[in-house]
Image (cartoon, rainbow, N blue to C red; front, top):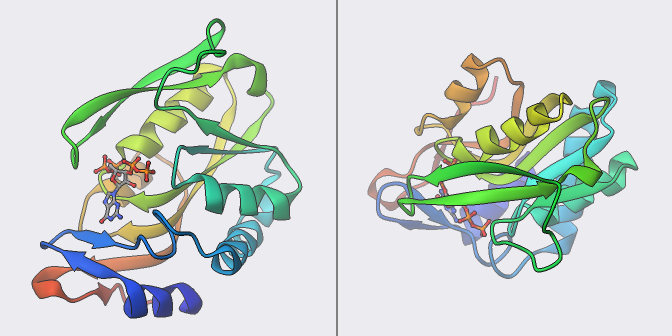
Length: 192
Ligand code: G4P
């Protein structure tokens, strides 16, 4: 997606050899016009999948996910990383380990909002090792619903998440794919 590539080139800041800081449009300040385009692009890519719910994880997944769900005309659910005061019983829980942060979070979704007949599109802002996406997929599968695909805003293709998810049988569709962040420079995977 050219618009997003241009934004990454203009505003992304490389930290070390493997972290891309994009807090001016995705991770802190958010660009609503860009997010609307992102939502439209995911909706086009997954238009034939009969999506009934969009699922993400708080917090930075929420903006691209809500724009996608708006375009598809279906509800969006975000998994919580912290226990909600009001979310007590009847919850689906999965453990998600973050290699970046070296900590395990329990992510939760209320059973009320996912049903066996649901066809779920998972959306997230970044894909690194894939742990968050696998955790979300396990939540969907706990209730017997289907994961129709995983839409990612920025994939770091030099980390194993995308190939692990594809090997597990999931369709992964990323709007930009980064081949390397070495020496402070962003290089993209060549698109065919
Ligand atoms: P994984 O789910 O693919 O295994 O990723 P990992 O645990 O390594 O990443 C943990 C957090 O760091 C996630 O956000 C993920 O989106 C984010 N992240 C990973 N690589 C990058 C990167 O290069 N740049 C940026 N900006 N973020 C990255 P989170 O902690 O859940 O944050 P938030 O959604 O609450 O903002």
